[in-house]
Length: 198
Image 1: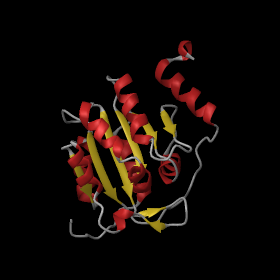
Image 2: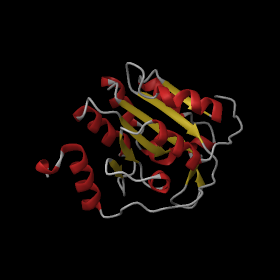
Image 3: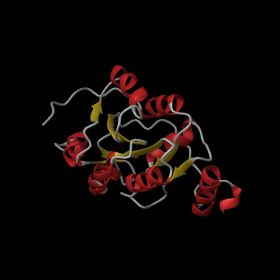
Image 4: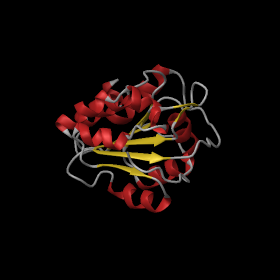
């Protein structure tokens, strides 16, 4: 088990850094706080907000990366959602699309259901699970220096990447993104494929 380290990163600061450095990617946001975090920083037509489907964000991003091999695709999700979809890491590891980056904001709590602690608060290491599944480019980030080193390299390698970023439980401001599923789907589809494909 990895020795526990002090966590100082704030989730909105992390999201702002990610979005500022990767402005041309397609983004799949896992349900809950990641959706609110992204919308609090900015909103784009090529952001897909998951309302429901807990555990499905990585597979959604995986399918998108396979369908759009010339575009960078980021899955931005939380530790609770990733714990529910851990099997998806094995699927990603089989084909390793080089245009896919999976980023987990890990505050070690279930933010949607009352801030109960998740398994990562105890002894579960998501990056170790990802590496064990076959994604060798897996890491855990604890501080600003490590964050600034890893963010430019999310899409730089020959394979998919997995990054678990430890964040505090502070949520900052919450801005709800569009909630109507058909609107989110059609907006995203139009952004990726154009009007003729609706």
